[in-house]
Amino acid sequence: DIQMTQSPSSMSASLGDTVTITCLASQDIGNYLSWYQQKPRKSPKLMIYGATNLEDGVPSRFSGSRSGSDYSLTINSLGYDDEGIYHCHQYYEYPYTFGTGTKLELK
Amino acid sequence: QVKLQQSGAELVKPGASVKLSCKTSGYTFSSSYMSWFKQIPGQSFEWIGVIYAGDGGTGYNQKFKGKATLTVDTSSSTAYMDLSSLTTEDSAVYFCARDYSLFAYWGQGTLVTVSS
Image (cartoon, rainbow over all chains, first blue to last red; front, side, top):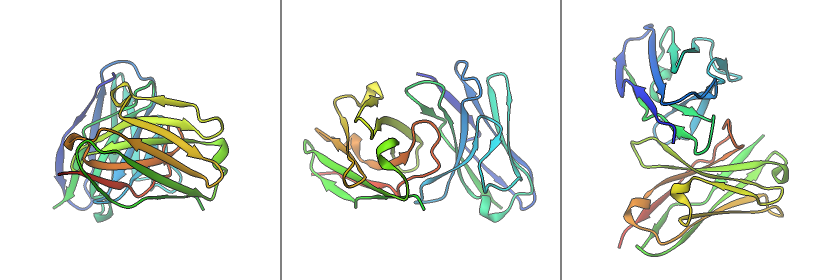
């Protein structure tokens, strides 16, 4: 199975900050990488797909990038609504696998 | 609009089975895929498998073969997941999500608690 190593596991940032979350894939997954935001006791919300594509309705403050096997989610101008857990997900091959999640809190 | 409504929380005894449902509306169920996921609270997701409602064809994570069985009822636009021989390690929230690769639509999750 493809391992997705996600970092950091948790982070705290201030309003207006820029934060970056990273996932490292254990093998090539092309651009078959998506990012989900999950609020407490809620279902995940698709934010980014194809490593860099913004899902409809997601603020342009969110962006995705790729450098080799490293995939990043960047959030600019952090707002209180951005708190939650962010999960990366590879859909290159079965079984699909997820990163371990990054809990983002605002100070 | 697309809706996926999952069945309510379950408290089941070890060794028992449980059948979870995911009732859909707002799209053509019979020509779509439904995927299922497991999430232990505070942890990340595990992909269980996928079913194509058109012909009932399935694909499973090897880890869940023999544990989970996916079915659909196109007459009621509902997807089901049977979980068998439950142990405490099966205690988790289970989600259904439309599609087979990108998941823009999710159910609200069903909490399964396995306890004697």
